[in-house]
Image (tube, rainbow, N blue to C red):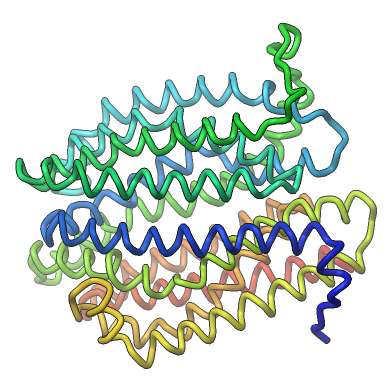
Length: 438
């Protein structure tokens, strides 16, 4: 039975961490919504469609860059076996080396990705611009993981809020001037100017480091065992994200190919896919701010309990997290299902995508369970099970897109794939956890 003791809430770092993250998420989500509204209106329909087209590529690049570091570092730091400073400096050199390889790869492959795979040569420079933000995202992710492991969520919250304010200022002051030269210039500028917001985030994290956090020459030498421990946690985690993002990268390519094969025009595909990603999904994932807050706070809490072999506490925290996330997801998506036209009009000044929202709303309530389930598996050292769930989900999604789209049902092949992905991941994660926590 679900109940939360008030004394437990006052004493528990889990509830304090979740509350701080929740407050920060509400603020950043509000700013994010404002940013998205302004961005979509300033960049225009053509810019929105082009931006949506490159988002799978951007997500794939970010997944490669982050390497699942926030979760992995958080888990290792929370267990308290190794010093946080040693963990940080054992990971940074490897990550920066990978960044350099990624930057060169992106710049060289951008013309092929844009012209051949996406069939839209105009997005070549937006894809190239992604390369330059990678080191900043990596350093920010490493520092974020360190503070998560210490269950100090204030640095993350403050950095996120300041980062969003900086992003909003950039959009208001710079983006309109860039868009005058064309939507492609606007997208390139938006991506490159994100470096400023990421840099601000890093500065905030450095400010919150302990006053006695001094870097000595001996600290700069990586510890092989520590690096291996972090990477052992990273690889299954990032493997799942990479599989998801690789398939997400190929999603518009497969969708475009199959829909063109059955007679749909490129204009229809770009327009509908843009509507789906720019308007429909953001409304359906509104509860993700709470889900992310709870899931992030859950990792160090479960890691500590696992180290102490406190199975009872693990079950209790997981149960509480699932009920809170599902309740909010169900309530929010019920409102989105009932008032889709109103919400789309108020937020995006459009009514496109209503039919997709009505089909998907209930299933995105289940999507709210993915975060706590996956985070608990990772904190327990069962990242491979989470990886298997993600792989099964994206395989079903991709197969559905390829097969269902042949029946000439427009974008509903993607909608069906989305549903199969959500349901399969939740079910597989649930049974994996049931086996892991006895």
